[in-house]
Image (tube, rainbow over all chains, first blue to last red):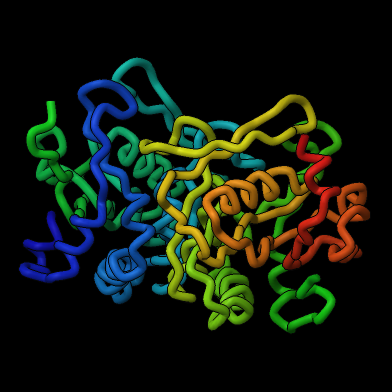
Length: 191
Length: 198
């Protein structure tokens, strides 16, 4: 669900956040309009607003785990975790985490990739959110959800700064709700 | 200089929550794992607070974090002190126009990139990473910021490795630590740093 439809309709912060995101055409390959959040991070007010909106939503939901997907999920997740008093759990590409891990494979357009989480980071029954900058196909977030559920945590919601109205025709991912701040920006007159 | 020497009461708990993983990523290396620190909200908050207390009110407008663990500590610091956050990334991750800086690894080379235009001339900047070992990555980071015209005020790290003395002996502002712990590292800009980067 979009923030604008869930209590934040007309919230001026959302427009500021959207306008602070830069679109880079044809990255990483032709045809892709890349949503670049690094320009959002350069705008202190917009960056703070982004974190504040997530914090306001999750602070009273008894969340004890914020899991962030490498690497851009690391830019948003820790600040949210700190503000709501939750632990931060990084979900990483293979062979980055030094301790014992559980792994979850997921599909890319061509081939597969893998996401890992430390064994013991999350305890049974903990309530968790997953955070990433953007949701596209939902493959990475689905892998993240599965990692947390394999550790017997309850995934309450997936939170993304940017996302399409529907992911594969659904407003949910693996049955979990999605909370998205803004839609991807377009560039007019771009080939 | 180091906060460790001042022994703020929060430091002990921060130190004990960092896990050492032997022989990762290869035999002989005692890896300092900060993920266990992040599992304790109070200790993680204390870590950030110690940095924020040092840097707030010092007119710092840029916090640059080194991929990927610098992305965990840098943004909360940036948000708290009113600065922008600038990610410094491995090659081909940043989508826009970048400047690149090579640096030396134990075997071979690597490269750090920053978006053109992220930093303006005259801005005062911090570099943040979880750990300093040889200092090669931090030097590359400082170079990127200085090439963009920024002034690097300090490099801030959670952990310093105690046994890598060679670089430290060359930098007269660097304090020897006597164990793993919470430290800030301050680099002096002298030629000996430049020699090691070549």
